[in-house]
Image 1 (spheres, one colour):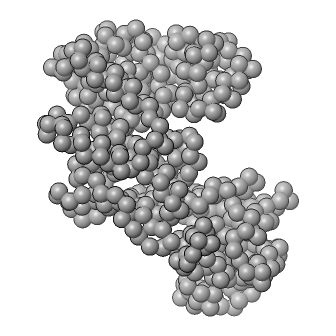
Image 2 (cartoon, rainbow, N blue to C red; image 1 turned 90 degrees about the horizontal axis):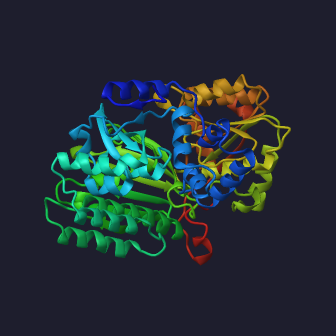
Length: 511
């Protein structure tokens, strides 16, 4: 079925289910398996793709003339399992078409086919175009399931299907779609948040209430969010707060810099849902879940390749069915050298001494946002050598290091710090880092591990080194046990920067 053209909804749903059972195959491997390209051609194309991540590998190979579009679709269908739909015969559902405006469908060359259980099945020429799928997820607020269609059928099918539901498919509509397409490639550096805000307000004034150009507003909002993140990073901001209010109150965006919250921007209330949905899509959260908190991570380079920024995202439901978003800009995806994190010479020598021991418990304590995780990773980089096996359990993994075996915990599936720590003890570790000792079970297991020949690193939310002992006692730990295991408690308070010299460091200061 996967290599034949699908003509009914039942066949399509069955083919999608069958595709889900197939092993994952990359498009380059699929083309090589069919003898359409060789290894040298693939490696050359991959090198070129590193310079521009926005172009899918298949599209790059077609542009280079190494394969034809027909070859690409053959590989997608035969080796990757994408169903191939005959758009001339397939019964397209009006409910699916109404999810995507005609101008957007024409610009992206896509035909919405079916809507099932919140999943929108669309026909495209190349399902690997991630930016196209992300934009459709943003506009429809549905999970997008791509299937294949022949390029020769797409344009006629789009016009024919939308005309049947009364959409404007005139030449003027095509012209508007084309102009949107031309303006879709934007230079992120060329517009500030202020000019983008003016665009949004102008669209509000110019557009009729019932026929606002939703796709143009979406593009402006995408640019605004990207610019907001770039400006926040450039200004040394630690957190971005997006706060939603009911009714006609504006969406407020605030930046936290040097520990102080400052107003940044206010958005019209009709962009409230779109703003939240777009940020959720960027970090692969469930856009339909508005009742429970969600956590995720944005790799911003996926959206703007020239900016290597990572953000930790928390979506929190508030009253009146609203949601707030808080994004923490991660200081670096790589650890800082231990000598460069700002410790005094005495504390630095004591920390190095503790890290060089074969066993014991090393705690970094301080308030949220003081840089405890950054300090621990710097300490791990000091002892990260091939002779040591180092396991880390984090929530989420913020900083990556070669040589570390890093695990992200997930409480939703009962994969907690305590269970990760228990698993690590069966994996022949030399060093274990636990992101946070949140409960008695995790703290108790950490102390036991440090007493059985392992070096254990973790964090606690206390304000000073002496309070660390009090906190461990409050958790119910045996003082005789952790008295033998505790090698170092490094307090890391949070101060506001006092001048230009400190401003580069931000709000994190070591004592």
